[in-house]
Image (cartoon, rainbow, N blue to C red; front, side, top):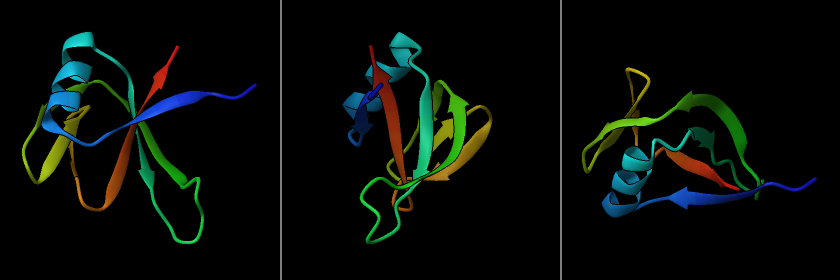
Length: 72
């Protein structure tokens, strides 16, 4: 079974995920691994700035991680 996901990058995408209360996971992106490694399955977006994303009370730096939400 394959899962389809969307990588969240823009403020509009984070706002949409927050309003829809979509669950978001945080991934390390290690080269040359195209899939990445799951860091945490944290939950819904609580806030965002140009530098970070707040998920489940924790702040994650946007430039270091990839944020994914799964599409049903």
